[in-house]
Image (cartoon, rainbow over the protein chains, first blue to last red):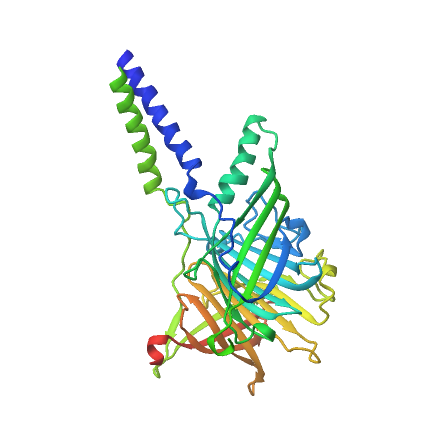
Length: 235
Length: 187
């Protein structure tokens, strides 16, 4: 009996140790330096709030933690788009002046793997800004560090409170973009204006201060930085 | 006893590792693509947006969707029209979402663009040229394709199809017909 108890205790300990190692895995920490930081390029910064009630419109399958906004918006409940979110938001420049409007579609990627620390999201931006023109931005985001740093701590707070909605408060920021470009940047295709016909890349950072397990982001902003990479002819 | 404990710990860790190795957290639902091959080397695929059923966002002042939409924060962009739609394949199954941005302020920069986002297949970014066919359809060309549409070039014909009056609920449609050539075919 003692032997079986030891085996069982060891089994539980092994499970807990493995999960703890996965949670504290240093490879899953957020990247806080932009790969575009050292690039000498013309930059456009687009800031927006991640709180859906601050957006023009936000929708998803209707069963997620983050509720669609405004209330009557159509939900994306069909199976093929059930893992997709749509956000329409005003974009602000670095001086907090409204400069454009952006549509972001985000779909969970089936290349996500728990063991690899990959919670991948394929997202695209369709945006227009007065100072830059229109563009299509394709990016792969890894939300694993955000999940470990913000969402799970909020969930654990909920569990501690025995059912009351837990909140996470703190300072978290990180680069969400991991591709598809080789340097881990997003691919930009200009449509009109300054961005038309130029070579550009982008990264998206998230700054989180408060997150609710019941309703999602409360005080969180994101910054999309588009850098126009000089071509050899223009050097 | 310690040996048994360590064996149990090893088994526990291996079980979690095995479980996560087999577990795929996301499984996208895919529909077969309805592509028609045209004899001259092109492919044709038609997408449909049923109106008003598939309108997720319409920022028009007269008939906004949803009807409690507050677009005042974007009023600094007069003449800019933004729409979001669900898009269907030719068999009527929803397979993705699309955004359309049109600027009616022709004194400034003219914008008329589509972005189609098909989660299991990829994205298509289209710039409309402003040209119209004899039957009133709008023409555009693919600026960028990603995923299954990577390297694809071609044209888009956007046509408004009026309700035929056959069903009880009146429903018109926006038809997006792509005539495409993949990078391999173009060479």
